[in-house]
Amino acid sequence: MNIKFPKEENYVKSYYGTDFIGEDKCRELVQKLKILQDALQRRGKDLLVVIAAGKGFFIPNTSPKPIKTPLKP
Image (cartoon, rainbow, N blue to C red; front, side, top):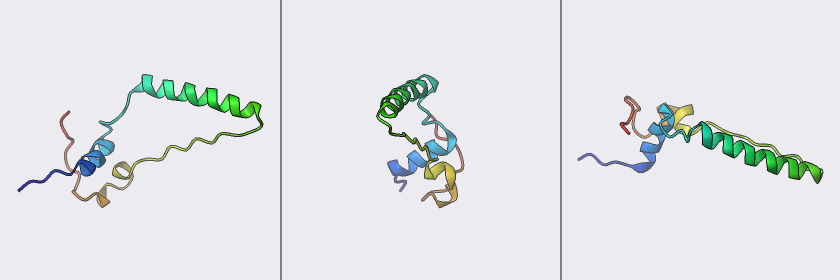
């Protein structure tokens, strides 16, 4: 019996980059962060944005199921 766990599938998508939201969406998010940063800076506050790699990409050998082949879209 082959049981599929959605969380495991997310690790695989992250590992292969198939969950990438696209350059346009990334630019939009960065522009919004810049607006927020500027607003906070006017109030004497700093904004620190940290983007960390997901578990599936960073340490695939700890995935519940070995990552061998990419998922088909």
